[in-house]
Length: 185
Image 1 (cartoon, helix red, strand yellow):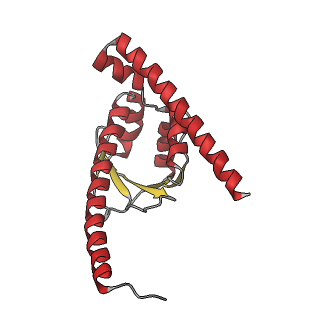
Image 2 (cartoon, helix red, strand yellow):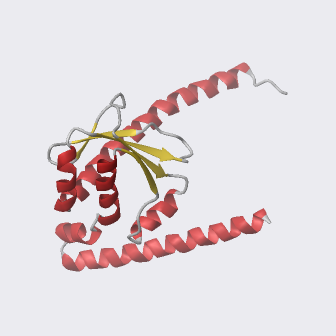
Image 3 (cartoon, rainbow, N blue to C red):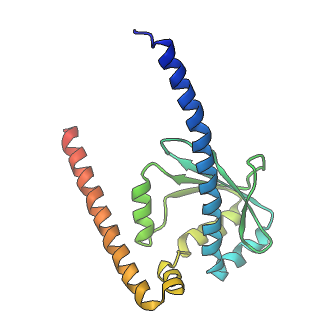
């Protein structure tokens, strides 16, 4: 086996040492935005927040399963208002959600079609029942948000354009799967 020249080895270590902190910072920022988005969706469904209020102070741990770059878990505490706040991962979880992240495009397409995401839940039975209900029944109303920002006419155009783009992405993904399957033969 050939040994890497010292200069390249040093460069490789320097680059990987710089990339990891940047990737971690991006992931933490994405987690924070994800919590804001989740709370936005929860606020639009009063029945969801009402289901979470009795669980105030309980802790949820969200783990991405099958992700190519396994980030750390997202740990959330339920607030007295029935919303979520991110806490450090030293908190013991009352409930763990294992989210299938092995095929993010497929997961996004499922959500776009109004289907439930692939999530396995383990932990406290009462909290699991309420979280399962929220996952099964609460969806982001993209059209309503677009209408509030752009008005009804522009929102309708954007929703239709988004639907066409999603369909195009689905067709492209199906085509790539077909090509990959042909190469596997």
